[in-house]
Image (tube, rainbow, N blue to C red):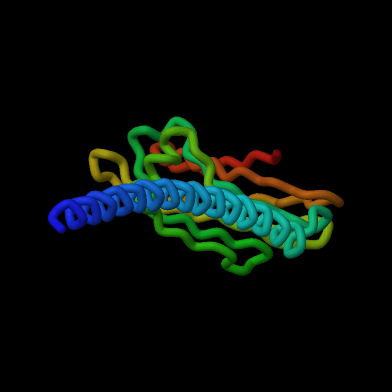
Length: 169
């Protein structure tokens, strides 16, 4: 009787150990499948965003406006307001991380729109501070000449000089 109980206990222990190994392998397999599904979802989301942008902003009517801070290590941008065709189309308050990214050469797309061909008045106003605490504010105007095809305009804010420059891409 004792031997039968010992054999049954050994058999149960072997089955339990084998079941744990199988479940660990199955869990690893499921985890890998979940990671693959996540990658697929991220890829599909990215593709969907590109398709949505093409649908909403066809290239023959698209105008995209970008903000940059060339050579502005000593300047901290606080806000930017953009008017296109005499209407406010964008107003942005900057976070610390956004300011750091712009200071390191990053470019922010602040507005994308559909416009007809021709001239469109663009007015940009910014507020900012130097590291010493001096406040800067400037406003500049520009005429966006839209032709057939996409139009990209970079708004370069030179904070310490209280200047705004425009660059067509």
